[in-house]
Image (tube, rainbow, N blue to C red; front, top):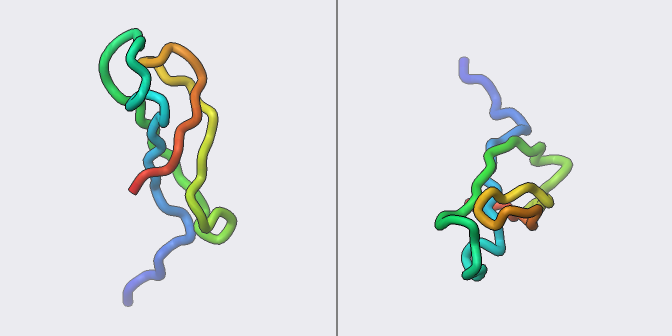
Length: 64
């Protein structure tokens, strides 16, 4: 018997300023992986997290 899918899924958060920022500390794009509950957050989530490439806290949005 197959089990049901859970409500939690793994998502990737990507820095929004890494693509447009030219005066960064080093090249690259900051990505974090985390889980979200589909029932509580049905839309795309965004968090303020530390970006080591921009060297500051920036907005990280969910990508697919």
